[in-house]
Length: 285
Ligand SMILES: [Zn+2]
Ligand SMILES: [Zn+2]
Image (cartoon, rainbow, N blue to C red; front, side, top):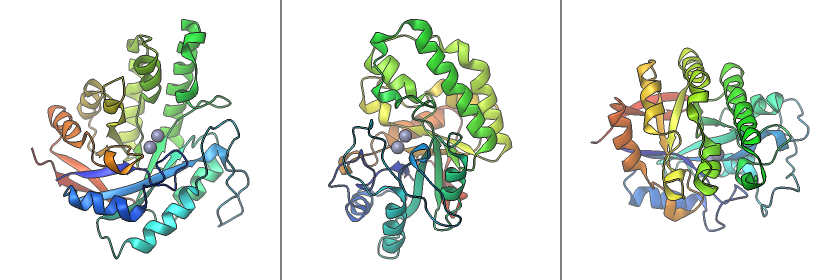
């Protein structure tokens, strides 16, 4: 039994224009998935003003080279409207940079229609998305400074923000190691990663195995087996699997590999969320 807990529809500005909610739901059914959670982007630091009880205006930062998109509120509305017709659907969002815009992040996470909230960090404060940084123009110490800040903010996110699972921990490695071939000594981050996991466990939150990196040069999920094992050994029980698909053909991609990895790390169940509560489904292998 597999559920894809991290997917993007055309409401995300960086997703394929063909990826309608209906087409995604049909594809997930064809694949025999237990559930499909649509988690369109809401990069909280790009929300401008927040009026009490309503969504703030959302304005794209000019430096983002994205096309038009209607973002998370429109996605939540569309998924909610289609749930009866497609029972496989769950309504989620991927909040980015929660501690950089805490008011906006809390407002989004409080939406009662949401089944699931991913907490992600795509960019350090005042910096572009890790995806866009040209690491070959930096010296090693600058790369480490970026990573130091990244892990420190991930820890702060875990300590303070409202979300269900931490998205793609080690996300910057997709670009730094995968695209630029720069090797990183990850032993430097052992303590902070341990603290991140302990905090998540204490607060009843979880992690995901995000398979997008398997489809890129990095050829590894985020995070990798050793971290999933560490999380488990510390008492971690909540684990979701997500393709991070940004187009129909990637829905469910890598979930079998992720399930095998979860099993190897000692998991017998993965989590699916309804109304922000985890339900545990048995891994089929
Ligand atoms: Zn993400
Ligand atoms: Zn995503």
